Image 1 (cartoon, rainbow, N blue to C red):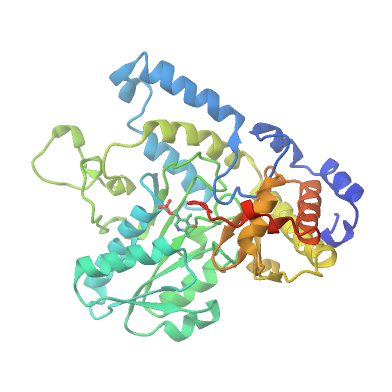
Image 2 (image 1 turned 90 degrees about the horizontal axis):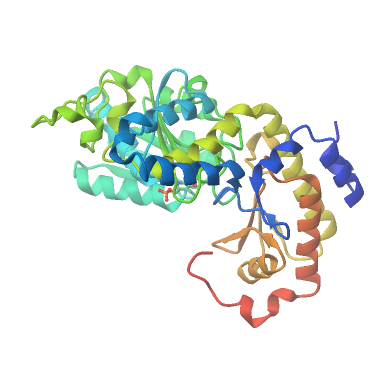
Length: 422
Ligand SMILES: *Cc1c(COP(=O)(O)O)cnc(C)c1O
């Protein structure tokens, strides 16, 4: 097997693409010819088939069969059926998964449900632990939930993964961690961390936004209590496609949702005047589902289910290692600081470097056909989606980075101005 460091010329990268057993997958995505897309961790590329699927749902199911589609085309079951597929993908055999709502909303439901369990089992525990480096919405949602519950809960933030144990005392009720950090790409060992969280008497809620579809995930084997995540990133579900919500079976008998909408009712079409939760994970549905998005996203989920996740992980690590090596050997004369773990066991599928002019550099890269993104502060983030990124893409994108920096293309005035979405 080729090692990343051996790929010291573009020709060797092209040859590695020729020998890549996963190379055929790229043809199943629609990507513009003149672009290297390194932002699949923010909005995954479109599976070609998704366009036909969307067109069929709009013209045939909605256009022709109208309201009958809830039954005829099984719209009503979509969040559960697709949720089951995602459940398989995240190794959730021992649990139930639904595809619904956004990750933000699902974090609210999961942390709230976990706190309710602890309110019965360990009522004195009033601390929620998370990471200062977590994606902001994860922290904002907890802040709002704490204010809403008004029971003296507080949020305790750790500054680095090594600080987890020190933060776990008898006051901790719930820990919310993101398996792969959105900025640095740091990957937790979910089983090890969940074990330590349980040993301390707390429950473990995992956010899988930057791991599902890029890193093999095993929520049941890890002993997770709840898991949530996006589908529009590495799962290629499409812009704003619904998130997922997974809960371990051992909690199903008692777990409660804070958002008791009619879609989570045991018998929604009885139109009863009070709420009875559905028996399984379905109780975590709230209201009418975004059917167009759900139907379209199934294409990407199916592709991931058909793909060997271990092979995908091997390729992802080879590509991220290659990216790091090439930047350091070919662009190392510029002030770039790697913030992604070198240790493969702790690396997700994106690579981030800090550069003092990060924002302008990224804008110049995008103008030159390499689409990554920029995150505060000073971070150039390059998502390596192994389904459609190849070895030569990595070579070419590093060469573009070298040109942007060597020729100081980023100094152009049009690259200094901030857009609304970075
Ligand atoms: C992308 C991401 C989100 C996004 O949440 P939305 O509700 O879909 O906007 C949340 N958490 C993490 C860790 C993410 O990476």
